[in-house]
Image (cartoon, rainbow, N blue to C red):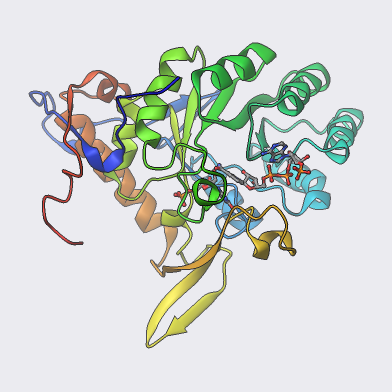
Length: 328
Ligand SMILES: NC(=O)C1=CN([C@@H]2O[C@H](COP(=O)(O)OP(=O)(O)OC[C@H]3O[C@@H](n4cnc5c(N)ncnc54)[C@H](OP(=O)(O)O)[C@@H]3O)[C@@H](O)[C@H]2O)C=CC1
Ligand SMILES: Nc1nc2c(ncn2[C@@H]2O[C@H](COP(=O)(O)O)[C@@H](O)[C@H]2O)c(=O)[nH]1
């Protein structure tokens, strides 16, 4: 199959409708995901330089969704317990290797049930993921299972049919990603079009994962079918971000590395990610507030009052139109 109608975030502009509110503050950016409602449809990527326990706690306390990464596997049981001791929801990541199946059994045996479990592997349209979904649904039926990553309607359908409560879409559009260069595969460069195709097949929520470069891309993701948007590089440069702070020529940066990078793996094997620096951006609450304000504005341009009013707006595809010659 070849797909002809391809475009990405920078190629699309949404078309405004008549405004029905008197202030952007009236626009409601909240989203229901699983049994909970969150302030904005944004979740920091489950990567070691984007999220840690301290930030996860802060996000949960302030009404944001989070997914803890899976790169300190032995800490996850304690993490769930500590979150629950504070009456906060627990949202963890798992892989698919035999140790991970044993971990799910351990959670069942110890009755430590996280509210959200994300199955996080590079090529999520796989029997290993389908099996993991089935094991989780069997042993921890109350956990909301997010599975991925996939980049095709068939991937979405197979994971949903296996029992996933949501799927995560995006193979290779991430800033720290080199999958498309190393393998020739992926949705990098046409992530928004892939999201649209996947959303048409989906019967359950989708997380758009990777490639977000501006706040307006969040609204575009919602328009093309996402319920939640996962963001890495744009959320890695904050005071609370776990990466080290580095100053070069008086400019402050934070480290950001791919989960399949040599840095993360500790070895150069099956490397599909790189390490980089992102500009320091101060406290994360300012960025999240700005995302909320920008989304409120998006809702007003959509002629609506609620987030999902963006879903139905018209759009144009004009290749590389967004910058219109400007250089930010
Ligand atoms: N969203 C994206 O585009 C991508 C994201 N990543 C991120 O990097 C991290 C590491 O991912 P991953 O390497 O999957 O995790 P793991 O190293 O935990 O691999 C998970 C399992 O899947 C197998 N596996 C991985 N890739 C493939 C493949 N292409 N074909 C067949 N089997 C495969 C692995 O075996 P084996 O290693 O022996 O092959 C292993 O058994 C994750 O956090 C993931 O989200 C990585 C690449 C792309
Ligand atoms: N191909 C790879 N993709 C990766 C890797 N580590 C993380 N990721 C994906 O990127 C997004 C974040 O994208 P961004 O554009 O917002 O920075 C993340 O959620 C993963 O899906 C990797 O090593 N290789």
